[in-house]
Amino acid sequence: MNSVKTGIYVCLAWLLCGCNPLMQASLDTFKAAVVGPAPLVLSQAQVDAVPFPQIKVTTVSSEGVMALIRQRDDLQFWVASGKQVLLMRDGLVVRTVGLGTDLDGTRWQGQSPFQQGLHRVPDGYRSSRQIDLVDGYRVGITVTSRLTREGMETLEILDKPYTLLRVDEDIEAEALGFRARNRYWVDPTDGFIVQSEQHLSPRLTLKITQLQPARKEAR
Image 1 (cartoon, helix red, strand yellow):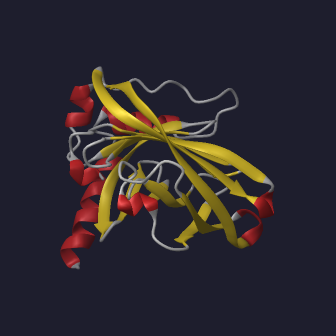
Image 2 (cartoon, rainbow, N blue to C red):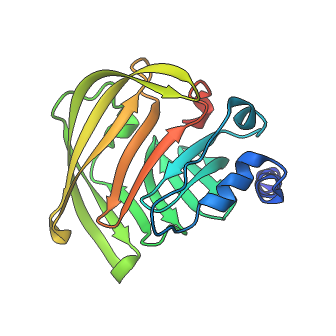
Image 3 (cartoon, rainbow, N blue to C red):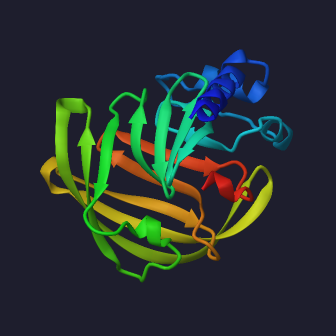
């Protein structure tokens, strides 16, 4: 336990010290903006200089980099230098902290298709989960889901091409009058989610890109 805590403190110190231009950019750009996020220009050298798996996260008003500081079983803790936090499980965001209208929790009713691997889930697969929202203290909101395989697409990340399977997820939260389409680009061999667009609530949408897709520990 002490070694885990030590690792977290070391990582946070690295993120907050500002010695790496990538993390300083994260601190500067992960703030609300009236006209949208300022472009975050990244290089492979900057990414490689940080000894932790990293993701780029974009909202409608901000953009920044987060590092994986802890993993507890299949639950990952991603933190930005501005102290925003994402908790992810199998590539799906299940909780957020510091992003405004935060998602406070996610629970599956039955097995999670993300745990199965989206590359294995049959076309048209249906499931449901419950979410809690900080905004309005709403708890136990049912979200229904239908997954559709959309075929192979090529994305470029840090000037490298990746051929990935795109899976769309149509979600609906009837209690909120909310519908949206999430998109996931996954490695067809193992289901690793390289990039995603996730609508977590009516007021919170994230685009998440793995900056080191070859590092499977960033899963």
